[in-house]
Every structure is written in C-alpha cells, then in structure tokens.
Image (cartoon, rainbow, N blue to C red; front, top):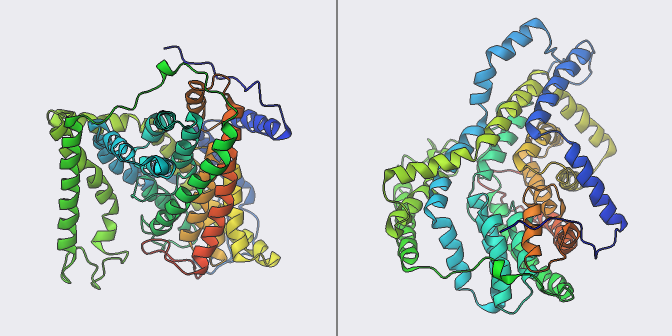
Length: 519
C-alpha cells in the first residue's frame, strides 16, 4: 500500500495560530539532533567555565559553605580528568542502566504478543457507552510497551469507534490523547519512572550529593493523574471533539483500514496463563515481604524506606513484571518456541534502544561537565536568589515550570533528552527555594505530556495524520492540531490545578517523596 502524502489541510484557513504552529515546526526542524545538542552544550560549558573562572562570586556554595568558584574545565588538569573518566561517566550514567534493564523485560512481553493481546482483550469487553474512557485508559496503559500505543491503540481506536457507529477520527483523538497527551499518567510502573528519577537525582547532586530519590517518587501522583486524564479525555471527546467532527464526512477507503480481530483461542489461553503467573508472582512477593524479619526490609524494619532492598529493586520488579508473564504467555499461546525466541525479544528491544544509548553518552558527559564546572550550582543559587527577591509564591513557581516545559516540548519532543537539559537547571534552583526534586519532577511531567499532541515535531505526529487520512481524505496537520488542541489546553490547565490541590492536601507524590527540601 502506498503511504498517503502528508499535506497541509486545504480546508483549515491559515489563522494566526496555524502560522504560529508553522513557525514552531520550522524552528524545531532547525534544531540539531539531541545528541549533537548535548555535544554543543558540553563545548559551551567548557567555554563558559573558562570565561567565568576568574570572577569572584558572592554566592555561598551550600556544599562547602565557602564562596562559590567556577572551575575552568579547559585547564589541563580538568581536561585530562574528563578524558580519563569518559567511560566511567558514561557507564555510571544512572538512567542508562535502569532503562536498558526495564526494556529487556518489556521487549520479551512485546515480542511474545502479550501486551498487544492484553490491550485487545480489554477493548473487546468494553460496553459501547464506555468506549471513550476505556480507549483513553488503554492508551495510558500502552506506555509500558513504548511504541505499541501509537502503532496499535491509535488506529484501533478509529476501527472501534467506526464499528460502533461513531466518527472514527474521534476514536483516533481519544486514543492519541491517552497515549501521548497522558504520557506521564500511569497505573503501571514503566521505564520512564526510573529514567526521570535518575536524571533528577543527578541534578540534585549538583548542590547536595546526599540526595537519594526513589524510582517511584511520583507514582502515587501519576496514578491519580491517570484517573484525571481518563475523565477529562472522556468529557472532551464526547462533548467537544466528536460533535465538531460530525461535519467531516468519512470518505476514505475503508478497505485499507486496519482490522480489529477477536482474540484467538491460543491468545486467550496465553492471557489466562500470564495473568495466573502475575498473580502468583505478586503473592510470592507479598508473602516474603510481610514478615518483620523479611530481607526485603530496611535495617529499621521498613519496606518503604530508601535503603530497603524492596525499594532498591523497583527496576528489577519492572523487568520481571513483563518478563515472566511475557514468557508464560508466549509458550502457552505458541508465539515463543524456545529460549532462542526469548533472547530474540530482548535483542530486538535493545536494537530499538541504540539511539537512546548514543544520546545518553553525550548527555552523561554534559551533565558531568555542568556539575564539575559549578555552573549548575551558580545558576541554581543566583536564580533562586532572584526568585526570592521577586517573592514569587511557591505554587506560581511550580506552575511556571509546567508552562515552560510545555513550551520547550513544542521543539524538543524526547522526554529524556528534554529533562536531561532542564533538570540540571530546574532541580537545584528550586531546591534552593525549598522545593523538593520530587515536586519539580512532577511539574515537569505535566508540561511534558500536555503539549505532545499538538506539535508536528512529535515523532509519531505524521503517523497520526496518515491514520486520519484513511477515513477523511482531506485530513492534514491542521486537522489533527485542531482536533487535539482542546485536549492539550484543558489537560494543561486542569492537570496543573490538580497538582496544586494534591500538594495542598499533602497527599504523597510517591514512594519516599517529599514536597519540601531544606537547603
């Protein structure tokens, strides 16, 4: 099948907002690749450290209580140290290991077909009146399978809605809102959680090396956020988006649309076996963790403490959460024949992580240099002093982080690349204002998610346009942006208000998380 040409929607007039989006696309396309961007920033840090190394600063270094001094990284000793530690800096980059380990398990579950079959099973048993919230929820759950939401849930949303007599583009909109607009809302721990935590912790070490964050430091908030996104997505789809779409006639070649096949007997058998395996695994963990003398507990006898082996094994649990049911499903359903197939799933997942590894190499070097130069500490201390002088309320500062992240997201789509850029500035600066890294990271996740669905620079945005063109031939970038804009704006406003309310009630953000930090 020939891929439809992606073209501007001839129906939508070029309003000022559309011209703004055109400018966003042009500017974003001129940005270098994220890996190259980190290399440029590394060189910029070297040059700035040389220029500012002779300046006497009045700021006090919170680590030594002495006047802050910018270290010249172009000095001979600094350069030799940098190259001597090049491999160590890369291998010790915290997000690298945790993401790769989690993806090994997820890769097996995806290769075996467990994740796809589970998503189809949930959609198949949903009542017509609950199609919208279930589709948004499935989109949220699909985050664990990386790309599965875009290539499976979004097109199937159109199929399901069309079969139910509803507009297929509304199904695409609801699924896209859950998959991408609710990217940081989740019921199930995923590789993104330890990835962001690792970057936040590295950024916090710029001014306080003693800070230790839990990989699930935002899990309670993101789980509650999932309920919010499902409710908002349901209301926006049924009350705003779908009524507007009724004016668009479905004139595409439906013979080329993807099908929604029912589960086969083998797939049902595999799902039953996988669910049983997951239940048995959860029971085994609960039984071994319950005794007061359990080795899963910290020396103080706590399960939720940062030094508890249970908390330190979160990434391993994510790995096993997908590996074990994936293997059981595969052998029960016949999609895995032997151990070679299991390893093939892991290998395929690692092949897809090649670009991330390259980006992580340059990000690790930049973060190391940023910290070693003391530029991060300088920006944090001086920036915090400026905010304190302005007497900006803490809540307004946090919302400012949300909005700034949402704006940057229009140009830099990768969640990990963007946080690697922003965390070394946001985290230590807000720590100086008494705001914890956990709260700063939660604010970042809201901004990172809400504007995903309106920027043409999001890698899967063109694919969503193609899905729309299968049903409405005149669909273009303008069609998708206009369709998704209500979700983006309402998500941004409501989710930000939800964070403030959540904070005001003192509800826990996640395991071992706090709202405040004492400099």
